[in-house]
Image (cartoon, rainbow, N blue to C red; front, side, top):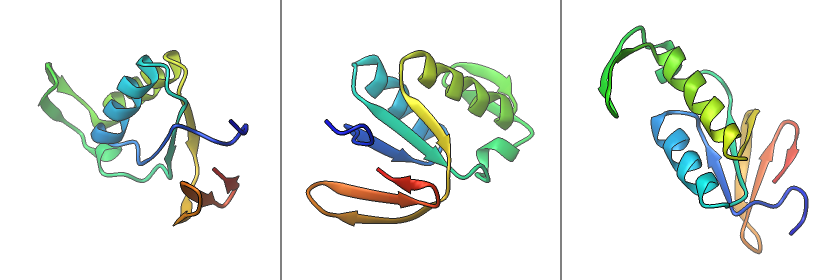
Amino acid sequence: MQENSYDCIIIGAGPGGLQAAIHLARYNRKVILLDHGGGRTRHALHIENYLGLELTSGKELVDTGIRQITSFGAEFRREDVASVRVENGFVVTTEKGQY
């Protein structure tokens, strides 16, 4: 596998993207999560009853998720995705490179 080739490229560090990255990385898949940093979840002041958490902030939820995915070996990069195309799999282009 090439250095910038992944089993799964996840776009967006919201709750769904983080949860997918956690589980894929736990099962030893090569995963990268790309996020531009401006999602709605991070800016939520209060999130209640999400996956057993009684009360947390969006920032805390996202920051905890990023720590978890990296602890399982997934990569996290703050990059804007410019395009996704099908070419022998998928090619994701950001302002910093291709995956």
